[in-house]
Image (cartoon, rainbow, N blue to C red; front, side, top):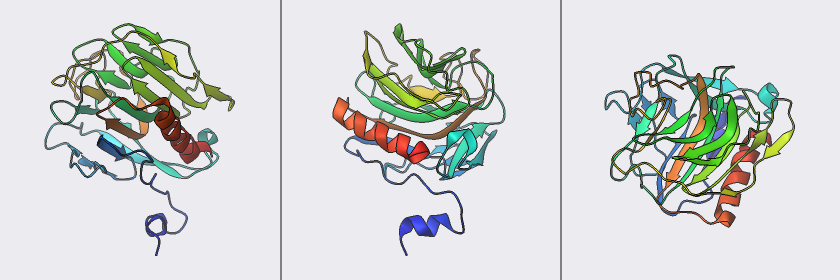
Amino acid sequence: MPIQQMFLGAGGAAPLGDLPITSNLRWYHDAYFFTPTQWDDLSGNGYHRTTSAATMGNSISQHDVLPGTNYMTKHRKYIQNDNINHGFKWQGTGLWPGSTYTLMHICARQDNTEGRIVDGHGINFLSGFHGSLEGVFYHNGWILNSNLDSRTNFLVSIDRRQKVRSKGLSHTGGGVDSGYVSGSGSSPSVANGIGIGSGLHTGDIDSSGGEDCNWKCIMIACWSDEKSDSDCNTLMNWGYDALYG
């Protein structure tokens, strides 16, 4: 029996499947493979996020997004914070590459709360979301601050230190794509790393740093090199097709 069919069952959600670019992959998390105490790392490197290791908050839950909801064409799993201060962190050697990285995530807000979702620690660094804006990036300075206005619709984002892109659907269902935008930026140190739902670069998963929001996430992955635009196009198209294709 095909692996995807084994996971699907009778009309259930499907996992995203293998990433199309895996060289130098550090970690890869798909919301399909989540329990309240662990979010599995599918890279093979074993970087699971767990409540026992305090790398994951204990107020996060898994949900289904069905075709026709938020303009989705596929049935997928997503996770969300049930306490606004709870999320994940990736810090230290092996987990965060530092200045040379590629980060990909598919996230959205649950509602009209404003704030960050993917956040850097130690410096002012955000990826994808800030205030009421979606599809924006601040790497100790703005790289991109034009709002794609996706709101509760999932947005696919690719983040390299000095080159970024987001693509998805606006809140009215129209296609939005920032294209690649370059700028001068900094990134968190290896020791400080990044997180989801930490709020204003605190590095803490269970206390408010301000600027946090009610978030939802389908996947996040990190590579220890800076992928080419061609590789990023492949990843972006894979992610977009997994939602809206």
